[in-house]
Image (tube, rainbow, N blue to C red; front, side):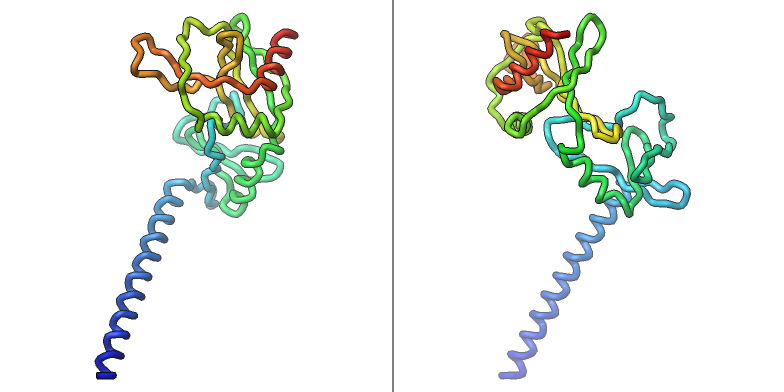
Amino acid sequence: MKKKFNRSVIIILIVFILILVGCIMLVVAKKESKNLSDTVSYKGKTYVNLEYNTDIFTYGFNSNDYYEEDMIHHITHDKWDIVYFNGDLFVLDKQVDEAIKYYSNDNNYEWFIIFDKDESEIKVPIYISKEELKYLYNMENMEKNETMKFEEIKQFASITKISKDKLVYSIISLAYYKDSWYWKTEIIDDNQEDNYEYVIILPDTLNKKIFDLARDI
């Protein structure tokens, strides 16, 4: 009876180990598959996609230069070994974690308001407090109740942050509507016929700052 019991315990342990090993192999396989799709090779080196924070801002490479598609281009940088490929930045595999940490920290960015005026853009520095930043990052979680029609917009602008090394920019679109500045969510209300877009008003303190800056341009 004891031998039969021991044999059952051993079988259960073996099954458990096989399941555990299988799960580990599956996780590793998925990770390797993801890594392969997020890497490029250039001159014998492996570069990993530079991932940004997941928030309401749209991030990208801060450059107006033309880069040919489907070709890897090396980017000059004081700290990291970086290449550009089809709209994305890739950092040397040994440096990518440090780079991701750097670009995820708002302290490493400078903030601006860009006003659209007379078919041109005017970029003005702005200070955004921690409370205002917290509000901005939480806007995508707020209830979307108010809508705005395109024709009702009095002025366009955007909030942008540019990394202090000038490599990365991030942006959200704003609209001046009903005597306040709003975040344009780019989400259309399907229940209305005239393509009304959902908007969320900026905090009062930030609204006042933007008003004051707009008055001076």
